[in-house]
Length: 532
Ligand SMILES: Cc1cc2nc3c(=O)[nH]c(=O)nc-3n(C[C@H](O)[C@H](O)[C@H](O)COP(=O)(O)OP(=O)(O)OC[C@H]3O[C@@H](n4cnc5c(N)ncnc54)[C@H](O)[C@@H]3O)c2cc1C
Image 1 (cartoon, rainbow, N blue to C red):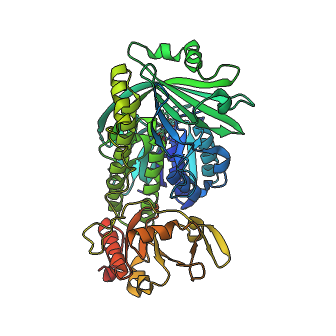
Image 2 (image 1 turned 90 degrees about the vertical axis):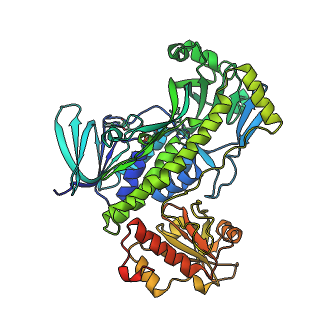
């Protein structure tokens, strides 16, 4: 059987769009199957974090992003008396450069991604097709799809099929994956509005980004992106016991909810809908040629704004692995590291979102008073740390030169070098990178290591240690600061920006040898004579 496509993506939500763009930029032949002719017009996600902002930059969206995003303000959580319970510094300068979080209008982001996908000559987007079934064979997988307008059924073949088909994923059902329920459930009315011309949140006295943890009516108030210079805002109101979804969605009630903040003279309603927030994680993300990404693999409450971000992280993790496999530089078993790396990361984010959900979703005055007291006297459990990668292709602790930083996200910096200057990712060009500081000749690859790593194309980057020193100058200083903090002279960064591991100059040879051995174990084809 000859495969028609390298990859078929089921669904054309933001996760599929990002993956289609990543694969298209690799030159892969991709088909995308989506049942709706039009993009989903209503907003859901409102924020993208710094990591995904960097990823989107890397896949060619850098020019459009500033015009469709707003930098995040501080995210404040208040009690019923508007006293701050906690704050999340979304406006701080992040390790990727720029704020921790940016706000975006999801349909506008999807439109921009769609245009970028459209410009990929090897990607074919098939709208108006229902995905029916998939079957696996030794050489390829077949996918049957129905043209919704005509009822015609067709069969396509591909090396891999990725179910980016959302929370009710059919691909998930086909691979027989159950889901673990992490136990959170709540219904919230989500209201999106546009500010009328000349109206500002400052005039209306609306917090820039906040959770109003008032048991009488738990409420979310956040920015919701910009389009053509117009400003979107979002309010969310928790459905309380005894109130129905229909009562929540009644337009008169919607205006009543908004009354303390704004009226028809200030804002225009864009949409309002009750969503059921759940926390469900697929137990199996891959079965041979079939895989899951995005909401098909995980859904979480949106209090941390990480649903779409996590789905795009899935796409980013899969894209470089598929690149190696489809080029014949790795066995398909490399794809087993996908769930191993992504599932624990997303599970921690789900738990963080639930942690936040439990702070706000308290409709009982007594429990809310206990919560407030716990924050006031410092006995409330601390806010969990943002996850790092903990499994998969990472240098593990058994290495003699301790690699505690393995699995961290690497910082992004602006660099300059012999008259050139720009983003590190743009100048270095992505892929696996060995970053070392100037003056550590021991960090250079040996001829044998270079031969071993030829199939994956590791780039070597030497950072100048001083203004005058030779090498790439780290203008922001974030990379050098990390090396200093970790006591490293060298580190290996993966194509998805996560750190494989780092070492002193004396341990650099062993770091690279461990990397080669780990690649080999994960299924990457390393010339046999060169494996340590
Ligand atoms: C109120 C709310 C707020 C949110 N806020 C944030 C936020 O701030 N930040 C964030 O990161 N995330 C947020 N999220 C989550 C985010 O919106 C989702 O995680 C994201 O849209 C999921 O994208 P996806 O591509 O995986 O799935 P979807 O967007 O659901 O796309 C799946 C696609 O598959 C298609 N499809 C399904 N089955 C078939 C079939 N059989 N045949 C053909 N096509 C099919 C569907 O039509 C759909 O287009 C929020 C969600 C909600 C509800």
